[in-house]
Image 1 (cartoon, one colour):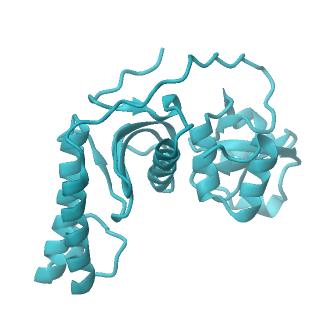
Image 2 (cartoon, one colour):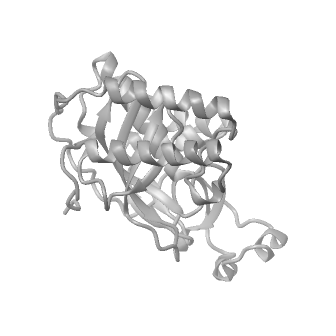
Length: 269
């Protein structure tokens, strides 16, 4: 049974009809927001994303994350994409998209105040901008423009027909969504042999040494990069959603994106 969404006024990104230009734009925002969260060291993967509100230049989404093993992280986060620097935050003070927009702007405004007053940036959200007065002034204008552009009512996107559930398979195959021994979500690319002994000796999880004779898989984590893991220490979750494929592609190298294209075809966004 799918987990209950803990906020109001959001729509599953996978249920949005992609045939309009606005919907394709919103999907790109969803991929960007989800990929920014997936790239964090504490995030094992993004399970789902829900559209909160979007404009021509900004998107706000609720994402359901799975933390890396051992990390204590909220499972539900708001995340933004678009013209403003991306931020993410917990849902405690934001149970609707409008409330979440206020919190996102407050995080950026706290950074602006710290820059203008010469305060400690370690006490505010780590905005990906050089802390200059010019950038602070530009961000003020962007926030003001965004607040004016957000509509008071939003048409709910049309839903597609119900998607059939994938059949369960016992054997893993290229393109499957898996969780590795460290709790990272990734897409299985290809099977291979156990890495060399010097590589095994560098691994923090010493359990992998027990599986030298097993088949190993090359994985493309949703956070980017490439990892190897033994089959017995992988948990198959079925086929990834289009959003999860797009997140992996967003954070992948050119080789990784090419490999995903070979497995899933050209992205539909």
